[in-house]
Image (cartoon, rainbow over all chains, first blue to last red; front, side):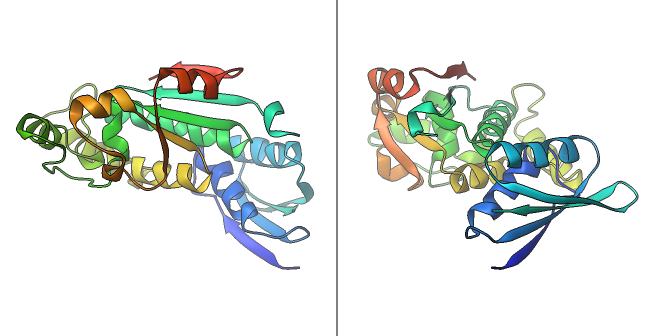
Length: 74
Length: 161
């Protein structure tokens, strides 16, 4: 099991979830992806889209200012 | 979920304008990322987006086709649908997109490939322009006509851009 990090704080639609999805596709089942993202569209949509597609969102942590970190398990 | 249960989006990329290609690839990538099956059918001007040669080259068979191929160019020569200013605006627009961290056309095309979006080329337009499948990037899955497009896009949404 590995844990990878992805920073999409500077990305915009549609690349926020596109980059997350591409990164998740490189992982094996059980691996984790920690995603740094901002409030608004990314925070609303990335965890929701991940859940809808059968990934497990383990936690959402407020890091600082408008930046959050979500952990997704494949 | 079986492949047939997947939601589907099929885009006919006709215009080949920079801004309309950005719109097409943005929709395509966003949809593929949320598990849609996505098909893009490139026809006429839209074919410029998937040419292997990204700049102006004398591609095609015959003098007219070669001249036309040169004038149309590749993905680096696609014009903005408005305020093109002899090709300056798309370069300016790409600069602004990079500066504001919005995916450029090149990044969107790369993402479309990474997301396994189905890219198809129109047989009839290729015939007019005298170009072959070898003139396209290898990710172009198949050269097809209307009948195949209708078959592949059946049951999903179809958009003409």
